[in-house]
Length: 296
Image (cartoon, rainbow, N blue to C red):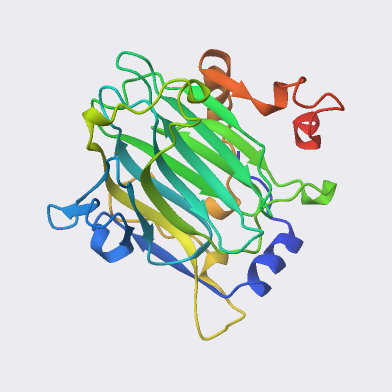
């Protein structure tokens, strides 16, 4: 549902960062820089497709040109097929510094015929531990699927093909940290994590199957972007424009929470596809679950 936008939240958004509205679409050259991998990541088809690859020497990755403070971020991704054990394909937001904020999609590879695990986390001020993991209800290697992050002053919602899989609300008033003040870039990568990614590291990467390749396309963002020179006003307080790029990034995202029609879908995912939820791990938290778990 659409939630009220408290005056205090508006003031924080305006005065902690000067922002401008940005709507961008599918030409990856305009919005993304390849940052590592020594040629293992490539833009193809005039910027319409980006591939990242991993071999025994290195993985590869990219980042957005801009930093964002709040936004709705969407990308389409096709994962490494076959025996992808030990590999991690990622799509995430992250700020800089030792007390960084981060919002993660990480796809943990597996042996042929076994499902990927979608690993999610929300890190604030350099502290994470808020893992939720899911099986997907489709084969993410056979075609492109859409993964989205909604991040606004009220909540974080992760979507898969438009279906919400996770919500993390802003409970700063209850002394639960929330990413509010640090602009983040969008990142994507493919890297080796054979020490933990597949069955806690029991299954290692089969390097004879390298190079492993994942595919990204159709990056869309409707977001607030750090701007200069400083200004008190911000178009982010009036996010009424829609992208004309034929994507699902809609208007008024900055005050959006879960819609009533989405609550049942979220519950369906958690009933049928969740693998791990830190909010249910009493062995990990014998002194009591984190406060946000009790509120929810």
